[in-house]
Length: 461
Image 1 (cartoon, rainbow, N blue to C red):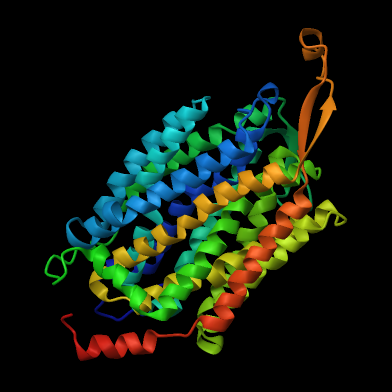
Image 2 (image 1 turned 180 degrees about the horizontal axis):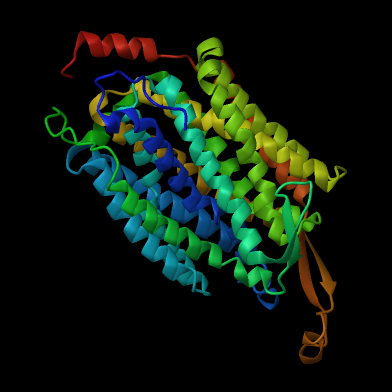
């Protein structure tokens, strides 16, 4: 792990290995999500007879959209305010992860929509602040965040990839053999592969428990109790006085809405195009593999191109990806390879945005600014959840089909079966991404220089 701060002969050992410790933190943080997030849509939507839960597109939108949004709405209070003013960040993270892991383990055994919605919201409240708190803890200890954070954060990407390859090999397939194509070990899908997707949630819960324990070994990051403004999140919201922050949030809500559509539908979409369920995680991990290379270049790109250009590149990558998804004539192989665009999407928009708001904010509200950014972007997933249901209703073709044997004996008459037309679905997402790109290009201006001058003129504000 190469993101060590510049070492000096007198630097304590814990500081000399700080980059490695923070990189390991990012690895576990994103492994916790990477093992289940790409699979959950397929599991919830798959037919009960196949081992899924048979939820509707609208129910899926509610579960993913509302849980993420409620968690982010409370993040400034649960994460930002407490982490900035009352409790050391590493201890708060450990507590939230232990609670969230327990909730997620229970969630994996539920089959009803009401239970899934309630427990998903509870899990979002507990685990929602973890990403922002991890980011702000890293920013607090890195000497040069713009240069070092991308290299630390890329280990989170590796953390997403590893379970995406290992879990299907160990749990969803049998008779593994070597192949020249990634993930290099493949086998036959297990007959009960769909119902086994729920176990990904249990593995994610175990990773959350491990992360909670690891947090207690991280560098001490005390709160700023001496700060003049007691309500850190209220001070963080004052960043809206800066036009660049408002533009970043406006474009970010649009980006977050289609970002949620990607994780809601991509796995199931690829299955409808012929991909095996056991290959969903490895195929989607191509995006994270590409993200490693792009993240390594983000610091250089920001230095040479500036924040507006890098953010715009990230937004335009969303447009291109959804245009490819909507082009039905493309073969499955092209669609799988196009997952690499996710690396550009995430690194050039989200990572660059994290770095920008850290440079824009004052030190005593660093946690709250990250969580305020999260809460505002969380409007995106709930819009995305609504949009998912609305577009699915608009673009679903219904036709009468007889039920498969043996269900045909119990219900001899045919039933309506819906098939989602993904082409207009993804073209709509591309149009939303295009609007976000135009907003960034036309309205965003870098204000970090002004923020530094203002902080130097009034250090105590």
